[in-house]
Image (cartoon, rainbow over all chains, first blue to last red):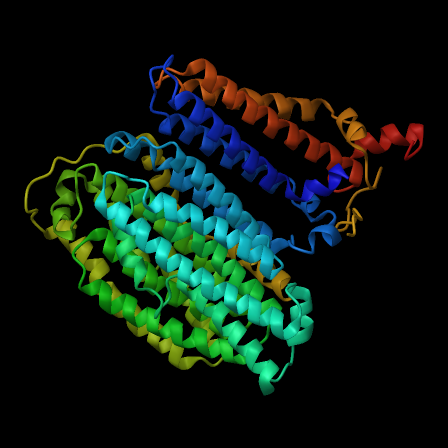
Length: 488
Length: 105
């Protein structure tokens, strides 16, 4: 009986570690004996350790995690797709936590609950990625969302942070309601919530008649709920305000981790669970709209974080190209896109966090960064060029493969919109580079050296972005396996 | 509720015990498993101690780190031991040992 739980050892560990850290934080942060110590860094390091041990349990236990699949298959599925998405998620979480420590000190941020909530949301996202039933999926999404609402408002003395949390709560609850309504319509029409059963019912199903319209509306509402959560146009309105208002590490986490888990859910529900051509059109439209709006709206931005928020909306559009194709190459390109996007975003936000120490908030504040901190300026430039899709950086490889997949399935318009919006996007990315190398700052700022964690993280991610083109085949073969395991 | 232990991935190595009980898996810990257990616990205690220096919480932080490390280390060692018995990980040692005794005894 105990062996049944071997399949969920990583999740069990991270949940227990979260509770241990919560008890540790509550007991000692209110301890008069220890003079009410600030525990956020302490809990942060232990939290980072917990994430790394979870990663070890997941990575080392791969074939064993498929055990008792008939027992767990009611709610969760373990395959190559789950495995690699969870590893990417844990790496992103580890990267995000490691870039927070200096932020805690600089901003006098003393809420250890921040780390506890990050770990809890990570656990929920692990469940989300492996969810194989609408109910399991929804419960995991809600646990993740509730944690995010709170951490968005974690900087209690900041009105922006409180406002961001409130906006996220209202809009997130609204989108979760729509998602749940869609799930209930699917259940009402088919009597099934399990993806295996839905696949059998919906494969080749013609959308005609009242029951079909119930299924169609259900799938549409689920799609809308998901599109809300990945900040795809036209459900993106909340993203720039919340990304700008939240503390920067929270913005980094919100930009990366939920996109991995929600895209994994989208692929499970819509590739495996239902084969509906109409959905392809919805994602087609959202992809085009996200790319166009991401490119055009970012041009008008003056703040760095808002620019990165619109940039992430644009990237969601590019990644949705892979889904819109509906082919194995499309799914593979989507997975490559997410992987490279996650690393580029960790890189970008680590730099933004390093700059925030010196109160750099506006693009204009970046002036003459190349003179005061040339290495940071070069690293930021490489990241921006990668975002713009300039060869031979990793961003170019991901966009190339996405557009190639679109051309392969005959979506010529999608590919051409992608290329044009990439060119438009170059404007605001290269504007940052121009500002750093050729601009003069409004006031001369002394840039403080960044801490060791961030510099290590930047070194690893920048090296990947720069050198990926030399040896891309491991990522290509891994994502190909992931895509195949989704279809088989 | 189907509590069958069958995995969707096929074991690549000889299966000693398809569903070993808890005591058998713990009894099957080899030197490497104990080393993993001790290493993870040791690293966790060290991280706990070092991170507890600044807030002046070395002892309690060390204990918390130790708890996390004990749990993680034990789970890692258990996972490896069970995997060897179930045939998912290389298990030459177990095959030799159980061949002498006979399987499932």
